Length: 94
Image (tube, rainbow, N blue to C red):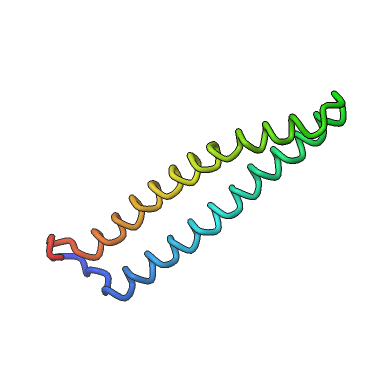
């Protein structure tokens, strides 16, 4: 006996839930990375009396880091959404 396939609406709903969760993750991660770079840069500049040099350097370093983390999260989400879509189509039909 073949197990019941999820209805297409359930697959779409699961994909939307995953996508909205990913958007929150990316937003929070970006704010956290940029915020950490900003506060660390300001603190270091105050300690070393180099204002604003280290803040600018750390913010510039945080941008590609944030982009790389965003890409990693997005690729992970794409795999999750693809798995959810495949679970909805066990027989291989599109």
